[in-house]
Length: 426
Ligand code: PMP
Image (cartoon, rainbow, N blue to C red; front, side, top):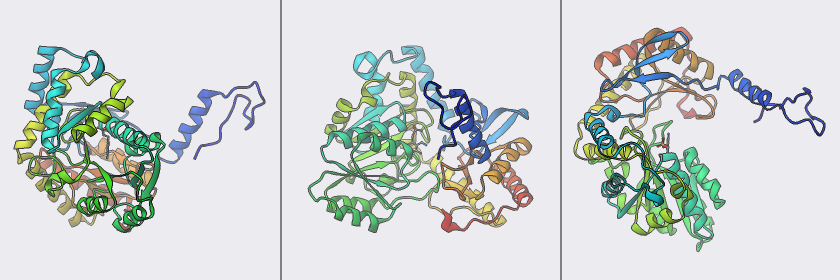
């Protein structure tokens, strides 16, 4: 909720003609965040070329080298030599910016090649690039839901903000179903007008709990009730499936999904978002989505770097296999120390602290005294009482890195006597 607004004259109801003191209002709201322990402080980092997960940190307590344990550069591809070479080469040959929107001179050959690569990755007829994963969800869902008359969107309760905003923006009817709950989804599909167009929007790997949706069963329901499916694989592309196309690839389900959405900014290590779908659906979104049409295209070097990353992870399992082994090793260490974490089938390890102030204290101390960087995850990103440290081991975290992390966590855990969080809180 909003903190009380204070005005020039410090009364709650300013007389007409006395406008709000805007700066005062901003400060009041920010102070309220600070009091709740939910004020966001960004770590000032300088990544090191070719040296992930190491970075240089500049903070109020000084500057020093740190090991990053919370990056979404899940496989370290943001420092991969093939990706860097492709980006350098593109800058050297075609320069910096795209020079326009996709419609007006900004469709470069690098964009065209990347879209073809992404369509192929997901076994779809076409793919469409956006500035980010956020924009792809917002624009594609917003467009489908608003441009299909009478469309009802069935949205998983834990969907990402970008999907929620897109659906809201569409003003389409929205039905929220309980997270990963097939019975609830079916009951809601059955209750809807059988003739209304329907779209089921959900994710594969949910980023904060690391749990995975029952994709096959959701596709079964979609087919039974004549709904389209929209699957966000942002935390899965590059990471799952024999070619890194995501959980739907691993489970042999790509052809049953209407739309697969992904990012180029996490496991692929660069920037950008996309949808992969039928040629007609992509053409439809391309033609009606303002978030696609009225914005400058990504720099060609970004598209070239992303393509090199996708191509590498299509043919190499080395990074994925090593990441799985690293994740298992961190989990074993946490179990041995009795530190509670959500037991999920993904690469994300949410260590449950359950208190925003303690969570921030542990994170600050890890950074200052141990050179370990794990951003605290507090409300509203996660529900109150489930504050956590979200750890994402990568293939390039060494045995020494892991031993150091576990040793530091053990010391701090005892120091602040963090209560065990019941797993039901997830
Ligand atoms: N979908 C999900 C599930 C996400 O977690 C995020 C970002 N954290 C996005 C979409 C947005 O992707 P991007 O970071 O590429 O904008």
